[in-house]
Image 1 (cartoon, rainbow, N blue to C red):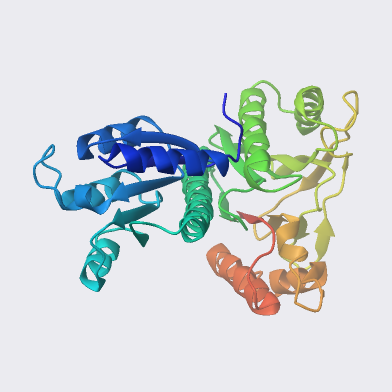
Image 2 (cartoon, rainbow, N blue to C red; image 1 turned 180 degrees about the vertical axis):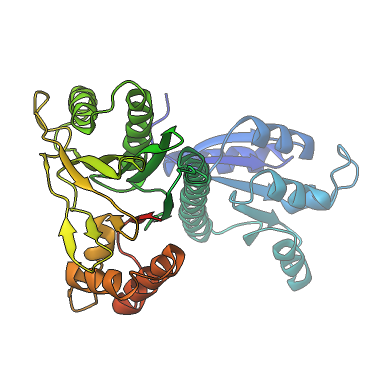
Length: 384
């Protein structure tokens, strides 16, 4: 077993006395050495093992008789491992040869007979530079892999969210989702129960990134599994809380608002599990907050939840949102706040829902002047 950190050097030369002298010198200086004596053997060795540096006789790089590599040997080695430093040696030193060697992919040039101190200094420097380059490439490769994974996760998450809102008689439902990162922990859904009834919810999973996105996906699957089994928002929250509490790691939780709208009866039943209270604006202009419910999901498995009910008549509009809207901040740490959001809702209460949605997003963006710092989700439900 090799000790980590000990440099491994491959030496390619056809002179036995040169190989012996280099092996003795480099072994005494802490290098692990391997030797080959043809261009083809160089290629085979590099294919099989990783080396910190290659010390190559320049005649090999110029040879056109051994294995057909010729002047292509350096470029082939570069294509195999561009981070492998190649130091060339020759007894026929000249400026032209040095330039040719460096242009062909060599990192440095040493004349025979060599000066031991200069040789060791060059090898150690290029070993360190090669390791730094390889580490950089490993990080870049890992970053590329992570970006691909995140992009795939984002696509999956987008597919899980409803592509379009259900068509419920007498009601218009619109929603928008803006993750602060490539994936996020905000969640919304709308589920048609019959032509005049729909369940809808909005939730915010604690945290950001992939862990929050995974919790969001699990939440959505659980909500959809329960939505058709009970009409009670409180019962939905209790069942979901039990599942979340049993499967969520310590310190994680979910805030959620879940409602069932019956447009035939003009009634809205809901439970608010620790979520920022939605804003209900009546056609008369009066404003109400929907707060009935209980604590956030995932803390106490046996938590109970209350249920609220309110009239929801033509001209009324309900705005559900996550705190990425109200807690969006300026560089001076001033929050957008609930008052600004309420003012917008009042100003645009008779405008099309899409216009209200655009106005809110634009107002928050202009207020912060730096975009959304957290996931931001809006859902607008309007009685027609």
